[in-house]
Image (tube, rainbow, N blue to C red; front, side, top):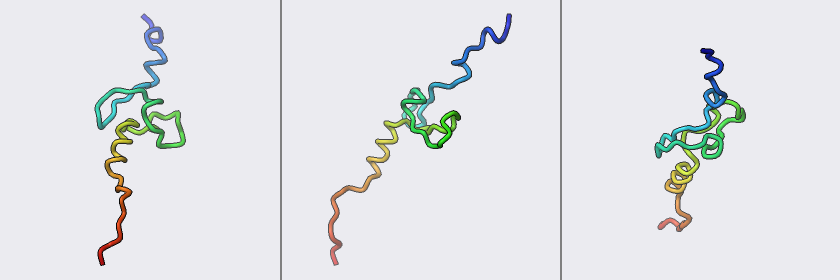
Length: 71
């Protein structure tokens, strides 16, 4: 039995990642943002999916309702 016959390209290239926030397994290239210029490295992609990132940004955003201070 040859080891090379059992090994496929999909085993070497990780195409899915588990989001650290929601815990779902999603596609690495479509559901995660690229955080570094070198897209060939797996560490170039974030560990938080796009949907969780959008929710986090919206929850932290200061409301557009600005008022003058009461001096």
